[in-house]
Length: 208
Image 1 (cartoon, rainbow, N blue to C red):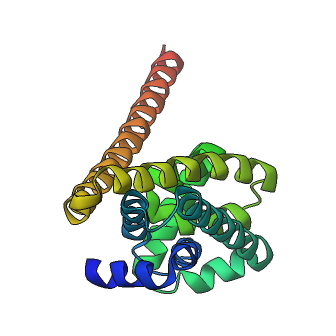
Image 2: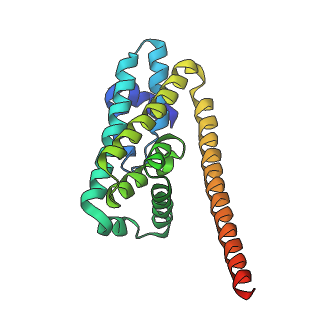
């Protein structure tokens, strides 16, 4: 896969990085992170300039997120239901909905880089559930800044070891996503136990 991506970046430059970033934010499975790593490597070799790679990746990501948000906003709940026809998609959308419901704009921020696989689905859900456009945009722009800077920067620094870096980052993202889910579960369990305690105390007061 890496040879194909290098060939695409060599042939089309920043244009293919922009297109991959845009489409991946609409839930189309494209290895955009590896594209950005490759772009950073080409900056290091002098074949591309940093403003071309960063600008293309950033513009594609933000415009893709905005498109996903608008699709969710104008498509609404019926669109989300159509997307969620398969069990796998429904599970991902449910996770995205919980992230937006609990964290709001902060959930959008984390979905762009910390739990990036949820990002496109969070875009749809944020639009469909009525999260304000301004709030979505502010958190989205900040999150995409981190995502683009990290991947292009690592591609530049580790230009000769792109595949190894991609594998490490893939494992790290999976670990971070698992930790995020575990943390959410811990918060939920703590709240449930606290509510149960309050009920027990209220029952004991009534009996007294």
